[in-house]
Length: 178
View 1: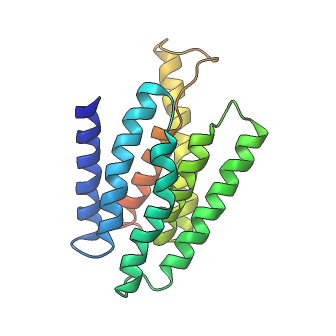
View 2: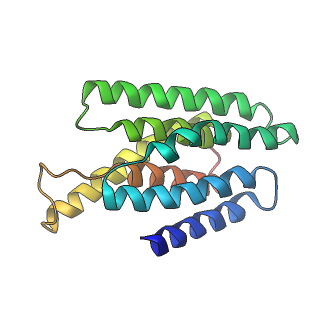
């Protein structure tokens, strides 16, 4: 499990450097890449996102995004990022309240930091990142059903799909204006 987390974290941190170059903005994304790699592996294996990682990620992500804002990068992006994190947190909380079995509280807490890193880029990035997470989750579920590795009653962790959707958008945002 540790090796998988290190590999995924390293790939995402490298993708952050590729996307943002050597800039203040790359630092929060490198850190979020490391966190994402660890959370993807933990959730895929244990079907839970630990509070010890998701809760501190919220203020740490906000603080790390303040660095580029103070350095003059991302005109108005910090306020948008914090608003986006709040919006995504509330949207996922509403989904959890509607269907607690369908979306866990770990996913809700993860939505806050994920919303911030997507919101720093733009509002459309937030929307696409959130939607892509659900699309990826549906495709993963269909693949597991087709391979008979899951049934319609199986619990499939959502965190890896959430983060995959976010990272597709983060990386693609360099080529596609969002």
